[in-house]
Length: 180
View 1 (cartoon, rainbow, N blue to C red):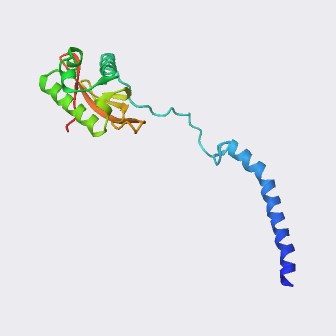
View 2 (cartoon, rainbow, N blue to C red):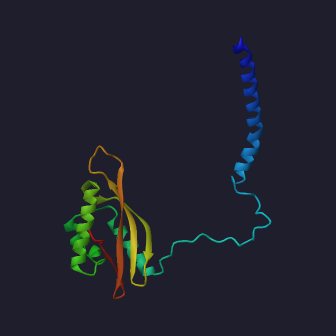
C-alpha cells in the first residue's frame, strides 16, 4: 500500500524538477553566451584601467639571423642526413665556422635521427617554431624535424624538436650543436 502512495509523489517530484530545470535553461544559455562567470559590467567601485595587450615573445631583431636560420633549415628539408653527404656539401659547410663544429653537428643530427627512427635518416619537412635572440651575439632556434618512420608498417610521421644555438662570429651567424 505504501508503494502505491510513494509513486505519485515521486512522479510529482520529477515533474517539478523538470520544470525548474526547463525554466533555468534559457537563463543558463544566455549567461554562457555572455562569457560565463565574467560580469557584463565592472562593478562601480572598481577602478577602470585601460586594456593591456598580451605580452608577446621578444622578436628577433637581426634580419641576417632570420635569413640564415630559415636558409639552414630549408636546406635540411627533403635531405638524407649522412656523414658523407653533409660533410662534402659546401652549402651546408657554410653554416659552420670551424671543422670541429661541423663534425659535431653532423654527429648530433645523425644520432638524433637514429634515436627517433627516421627512415634512411631523411628529414621530409622542417617547421621553425621560433628564434630567440639572447643578446647581440647569441640566439637559439627551435625547429621540429619531421620524417617517415623506419618501419614500413608504421605509416605515420615521426617528429621531434631540436634547439640549436646560433652565434655571431665576425659579422656572420653560425650554428652550433647543443652538447650531447
